[in-house]
Amino acid sequence: MNLQTRALHPLFAAEAAAVDLFDPAMPSAVEAAVDAHAVLVLRDQWLDDDAQIAFSRRFGALELPPSLGIRDAAQVRRVGEGIFDVSNLNADGEIEPRDSPRRQFGKADHVFHTDSSFHALPTKWSLLSARIVPAHGGETEFIDLRAVHSALPEEIRCRIAPLSAWHSIWHSRARAGSPLPPTEIRDRLPPVLQPIVRPAPDGRQTLFIGAHAGEIAGMDPDEGRALIDELNAFAAQPRFVYAHRWRAGDLVIWDNRCTLHRATPFDDMHEKRDMRRTTIMEHGPERSAVAA
Image 1: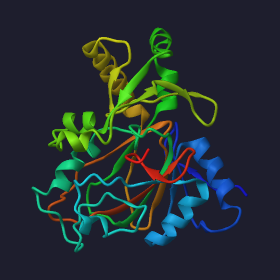
Image 2: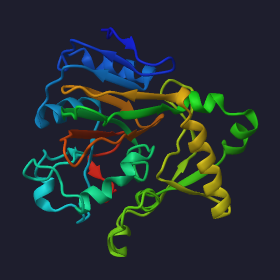
Image 3: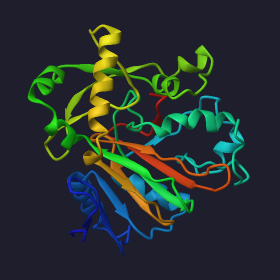
């Protein structure tokens, strides 16, 4: 089975309509499409949490949301087990107050990152289901890091090829201005080392950077951060970016191994945005970053 897709950007990203997610041939078709395009938009997928989880598990074990004590138990129960709640809504489905810990913790979502690069086990894809979308704003921007790596000057590609960076959720939160939790909570998610360059599923080389990358192993901290900032700035050039304008019912799948993404602003004190994410691990059992 081949998905009939339409390109959304000259370098990557495609959409498909009228797709039956639970067709037996769908997993292989979706795997091929995501490997080719890195970002796949499936329109008119009116999923509940159970259906989203069931579909996601066809592609691997889920990464489970960690329990860190930052989000209260009532908020976690708003969505199904295995779902990351990336909305601006509280447990009652109303807009979060401006000073809520959850809203403050999510500031880093507005900086280019790859989901769970701070995970001790590698992650594969994220699948984001749009249940309620704002009338204006709230797009998600994506970067194709395969194209970015190919466009780097050869001297930089040679320089970064053997390097690895330390990724930490607390690094990205601190740089975004989010208040950090106590040390005993931060210690439950210590930094993990990831290669800066790795092969993408389609065989091309890709960068593995983003806001969670803080320091480079074996390099002076300031020098390492400067190099990461240089790579992130190069990647954020408009020619590498696809901005997805959400419609309710969209299911967007992206490959965390070769893309970055970020949320863009909207009037989040007056408009609701209900988005629910499942994330798939590249291998291993279903567990959270804390458990790993």
